[in-house]
Every structure is written in structure tokens, then in C-alpha cells.
Image (cartoon, rainbow, N blue to C red):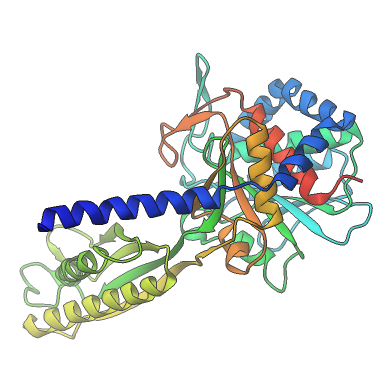
Length: 430
């Protein structure tokens, strides 16, 4: 057998096995299909689904209003306060903002033995000076953050209004949350706080984030993030020539790291790495006194992140050694490595009731459920073994995290209906 034929057969087997696994994971048990169908037969639920569709205009108005309130990383207060004010105008038992900035609205259940959380994150990736005004061209809304994740906040408001209008009561408590710190260097700080000893006890977590209807995210994509900083005395490029140069060390570190990281990520469980930002220096004719880079690493296997971390440390320290060997004058340059992000990975089994209900509700809405992996607020409860899913915000959109992000309200009400059905089925209708 030729090597090419062996390769083709191997790839074919991998394809068949992966598809078998995907099909196995997507199986919806009949009992949950029946549960959703019976729920929809209820007169109040029928009315709720109709009201959600009729509420489209108001939901879109609130969506635009919240989008135009800046919520840059670590500065979500203005949007959080506005969201809290809107929640207080609805029929809820209590509204509050915790010590890190998360916004909560609680509707108590008739039994209150469990708490079901519905989450949308407040923050965007865009800096404070970004123009977040919404431009409308035809049926398309353009604005940074228009879909990721302001849409989820508007969906939450619609769901609460629907509960009030239909007088639907659930057995379990419902906790509606606008979380801080989901994006970038926020490092999931909002949801980490909620699931810490200082947070609010939560038994199931339903997050709403990017993506179309049909997404059922039950796998947390883990990531490590680092800031690598080379430090030196700095000086004039001519008069102080011969000093250890932090930029030269950084360039060497990137090369050494990429060579080894490329080898490591070429096999085994999928793992990625990215040097996303670099900086430092004062002018073209100055030896810099610092040079830094920020690195993102991701993997479905947390052990591989630990290995890649060691690759980074080895490369950076070797670059430091190389630069200090060739310097001619002055003190040695130094190295500082800080882990600035740690998102745990994990995976929930598809047979969990919350996952089954999410798939059954998705199928009822006419969309085949897709069990996905991603880096969302659900990473935290998933890593702790707490039932959690992330659903798509619906509509049609693209260019998330860019200045030309756009979104179209194309049957977006269906994603609200889906989230509503899942919330009621998981919390139990009284």
C-alpha cells in the first residue's frame, strides 16, 4: 500500500468517526421533544410566543438604544446603569448591581429551590473613544457591538416583558444577568465572580451570544493569555549603542516561540497560538527601555495549553539570554511574563436535561441543533460541571469585533422564542 493511499484511508476514517460522533451527540431524546411540544400547547405559552413576535419593534428600539451607550473593556458602568434602569421599569422582584459591575434582575419562582440564569454580556471589545452610533442602511444596522452582544440584552428585556404580559410563573427562580468582562482581557471576570464564593448561587446557566439560531454551545474552548515584557535601561541609538535592546530580544523570542509552537500544534488535539499585540519604544533613534507582546493560546485540551506555556517561557528566556550575551555595555535587560487571561475549558455531556431541552427547543423552532465549542461566559459553569449552554442571538450578522460590524433583524424574534421556551422548560412552569 502506497503512503498516499494510507493517508487517504486514514483521513476517510477520521471523517467517518468524527461524523458518527457528531450524530451521536446531536440525538434528542423523545421525552424532551414531547416536553417542548406539550409546553407549546399551553395557552399562556402560545400567547407568549405571539407577543414576542409582536414586540419586535420595541425590542429593536431598545437594542439600538443600548448599542449607542459605550461599554468598553473595564468601563461598562454607563451601559450597566442604563440596563439596570430599564430592568427596574419592568415587573421583577429586585434589581441590583454587584461589586464588579454585573447587573441582575430576579423573578422569584413559586418554589425557589433552584435558580436559572439567563445571561447577556454588557461589554464590547471597542475602546472608549469608538463611535458606537447606529447607522441604518435599508434593513441593515451598522455599529460596533450591534450583535456582540447588545442584542442579548434586548432579548432579555423582551423575555421579562413577556412573562409579565402572560402572567407565566415558574417553579424555579429566574435570574437575568448583564455581565461584565466577557471580552478580551476582561477574562470572564463577571461570570467568574458569579460562580465564586462571593457570587449568586446558580444551578443552570443560559448565555446568549453571537451566532445564528441553532447554536447550542456546550463545550468551553480554553485559553491562556500572556503579556511578555523585556525591560532595559534604554538610551540613544548612537551614543548608547551596545546596550541590551528589548526589541531585539522580543523579535528573537517571537521567532523561537513560533518555530516550536508550530511543531507542537501540527499534531494532537487542536491548539492555536497568536501574537496579537506588540508595543514599546519611544522613537526611531532610541534604544527602547521596554518591548512587550500579548499572546493568545487556545486548545480543546487544557494539558496542551500547559505544554505550550512552557514553550513560551523557554523561548522568552532563551531570547533574554541571547540578547544579554551580545550586549556590549550597561546592565542586563530583564524579562517579566504575566498571565493576563485564563479561560478554562470543559465539555458537558449531551444527555444533560438542559442540553436536551436546548436541542429540543431548537428543533421545534425548525432548526437542526448544532453542538458547538466556543469561548463564552459558559466556559466557567461548564468547567465546574454546572449545566450551561450558549445560544445564538439570531438574526443575520457579521464582522463582529470590527468597526463595520452589522446585523439584520431577519426573523430574530425566533431566537427570543427559543430562549424563552428553554428558560420555561428548564425552570418548570407552575
